[in-house]
Length: 338
View 1: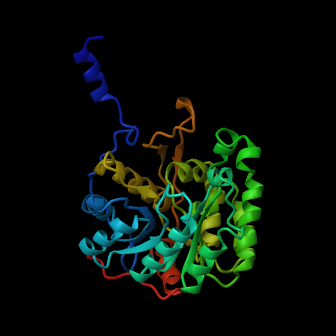
View 2: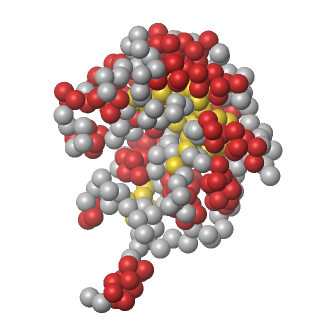
View 3: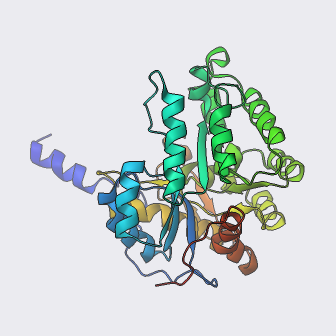
């Protein structure tokens, strides 16, 4: 194959975030809710991504966000996008040398000083490999630091079930899913009155009956529905059960995309995630997902089966529940759409 032909073939190959030729720039009406729609789980990793992020998000109707942004970048984002963002306190990732617990504790305090009222704790299986347990004495000072400041706690526990069968198959190294949930419930039981947000449907959209048990047992617990490939794959596979779960628990689920910005992630990449979420929650669309799922074979890519949630459920998902959760720790976001 000549270089010219190879380039031409590369140019026409569908991108991994648009396998089906969706025109992501086509107008999409704003969600039919009262107040400004809120994406409560994003990762704007650098201030230089802020304006393109906001442009893509606003195209799909979202204008308010809670974001996990490095502290040094959050200060600038707060300046250029005032009133649109609530920052979630996070550590300096990969800074795990001696003294990292104290440095992490100080960052919680610094985020709190700039208005943050949620602290995030990531305890997916790779943390277990490090010997980290959220219920250990090692991490208790961090939980106490956040809770003593009146902050809510956000946790990432668990990962896709497919990963437990592949990349985490070595249970001696990574633990089991049951191990991870026992660890998490130990902490939930220790802090029963603390507002708690469980990312990615508590890390287990594959098992909605387990999620129902958690919601019934812990009245302080909320869940966000963030992630795209994972959520689409597993909720669409059990569409009717998922729809019933969301309607039943409509006061406890908060919308989020889990979109992560990056220098190589352009407007269309960002738009693909907003498009997918709005199709999933608001419509009865059935068809192939435009986003390639690397966890599935090429001939078994996900099929969208939209949940078509009722309007009152969408009002809470996109708006009311996020503000209710923030208000429980004395925080808010500007609620006037621009």
